[in-house]
Length: 107
Ligand code: FES
Image (cartoon, rainbow, N blue to C red; front, side, top):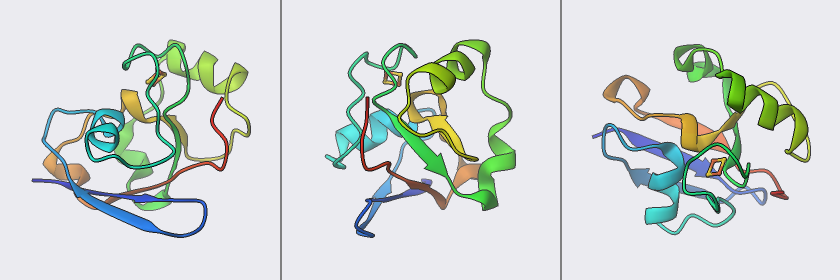
């Protein structure tokens, strides 16, 4: 069971057990992690699931798809290296320990 660490803007860490195959957004919402809203239900159309993925596992995620790329460009408050839509991150055992920072503001 992969673990995911969500770090709030104030540094509080939320360590949760994920289910392989579930998205990082759905996992956060299911566990009540504050700051990840998932308003569109994972359809890559709201950007309220934006996170900053830390370097160590970023390369394993592959590149964002076109839809995700557009939304990151247009909708997020501040795009940085590691910016991803957590609804587009499918959790697997290989992503155990994935750590993401939650932005201070969502769209
Ligand atoms: S939940 Fe809406 S873009 Fe991810």
